Image (cartoon, rainbow, N blue to C red; front, side, top):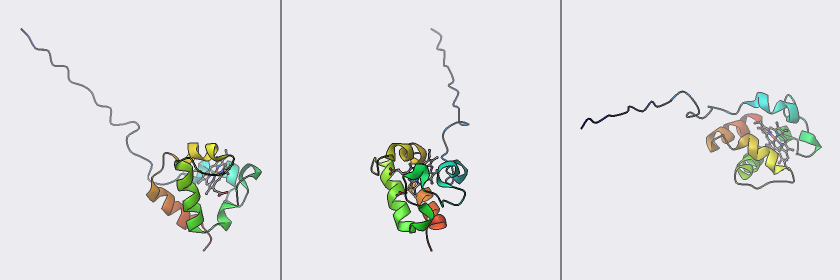
Length: 95
Ligand code: HEC
């Protein structure tokens, strides 16, 4: 009997590494260039929130908490790690 071993090809190139940081270019359409707008007239003005408030809101979206339009944000933020969220909150939050 001949054993045929099929080598599996592992595709490492796609979808494995998470992005290093939050890509804010994807946020600006709703939140404004510097997070100065109320997204869709619903959100708070993110740049006026403290880092702690931003962090709390974004971590909340990941686990399904938030305001009436939280579904939109869950979709945007689910792929980011807590560390990414913390770094974003520090850079955008009110000093
Ligand atoms: C399609 C429009 C849209 C995009 C794109 C979007 N957001 Fe939002 N964001 C919203 C809405 C609407 C809310 C309010 C959701 C709710 O009801 O809680 C919100 C809420 C937030 C909040 C919390 C503000 C609050 O009111 O507590 C933060 C922080 C935030 N977004 C950051 C981001 C970041 C970072 C990105 C990019 C990765 C992003 N958003 C992309 C629409 C958007």
